Amino acid sequence: MNNNLVGGIIPPQPPIQAQSDAHTLKSRLEWGEPAFTILDVRDRRTYNEGHIMGAMPMSIDELVDRAVASLDKSRDIYVYGANEEEAAQAAQQLRSNGFEHVSQLQGGLEAWKAIGGPTEGIIESKTPAGADEYNVVARLQNHAENQPKGGSSPVESIKKGVSNLKEDIQQKAGEVKEGVQQKAGEVKEGVQQKAGEVKEGVQQKAGEVKEGVQQKAGEVKEDIKES
Image (cartoon, rainbow, N blue to C red; front, side, top):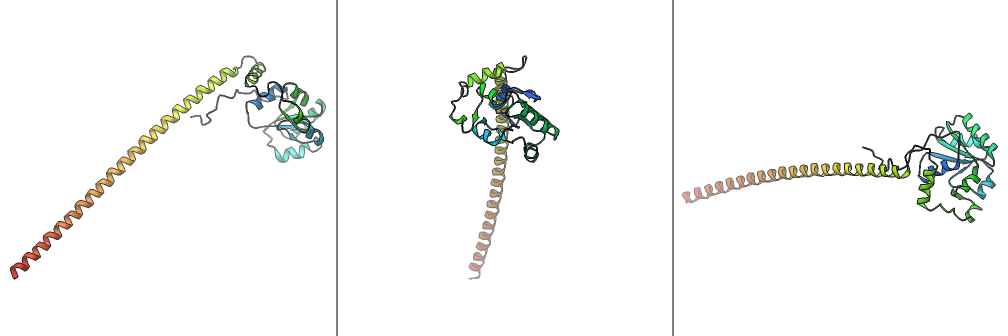
């Protein structure tokens, strides 16, 4: 049984590439995919002014030391900087130090903002959200338009996910029903056994009382004869 009840609903993503466009990263964020990190290698002041939502600040001069200390080397990492050269340099440093899945985000923050990607920071907090930022239909359409040709559409993936979810629920309901019936059988058997023990105890006690009464009656009868 698939223990993940939402399995199949989130469209599968292709393996991380050496370079990625903003659409690829945005689709992963929107579908809630786990296990990846976004690194901003610009200086801290620039980072504080505005950055991709959820990005971690690691300036390029301390990138390797901090990444090695805090990140798993098999984790998917997207990196961007003040320009393409800085981002490429950062990606190369990470790969040279054993990080297996590193992708340079092409266009950096500007490309991200151009497609309505969510941002945060002192300046960015004053900027209105993009037109499709809270529009689920637009997000689905955007995701579909930017997926490789020949893959499953979001609608097909959602239908498949709902079908999987329905099957899992039905299977779980069957298991619960079977468990309840088994427990009910055990309770019934326990009650019957207890009732048998109580009946046996009552009969035994009744026999003892009867025997005591008969013995007492015999003693009384004997006393009467002696009198």
